[in-house]
Image (cartoon, rainbow, N blue to C red; front, side):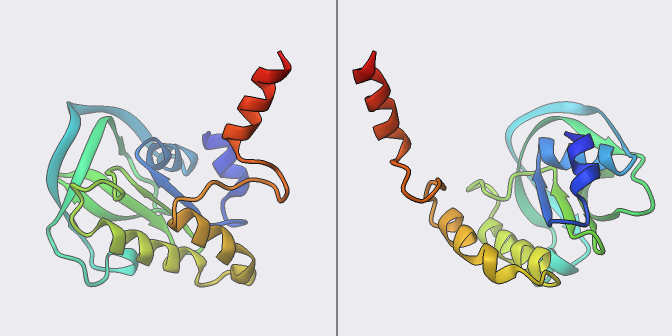
Length: 166
């Protein structure tokens, strides 16, 4: 995954969560290693810089953590914008429009997760010329709809058709 990120960064906005965050750290030359403890559904209060996607959010911010690895040795190109007890919890690269969260903003344990994701999407897309092209896709994702090529039946119907052919 870090190789793909290296090729795509600066071309498309990239938002990484958990493993995606770790891949971003590696793609920019950082290190990912064992965290001090294995976390599964633990709420922690992270501290953030109040900038970009974190603007106006509670500080500290309660978030959901599910991980055993953590990024470190973050290169100068990435901004560390959130941490927990010295562990990197979020990074961003403003020029490339790349950001990563070690925690899970989509979890109910992240108290302002929906707002954080909205602000992250706004940040990621603010300098893109083709934002209007992405708008319908983002709306479908926001509404938890399945993306599929036009005219293609939903996955459930495709599976049923395959079973009846067998």
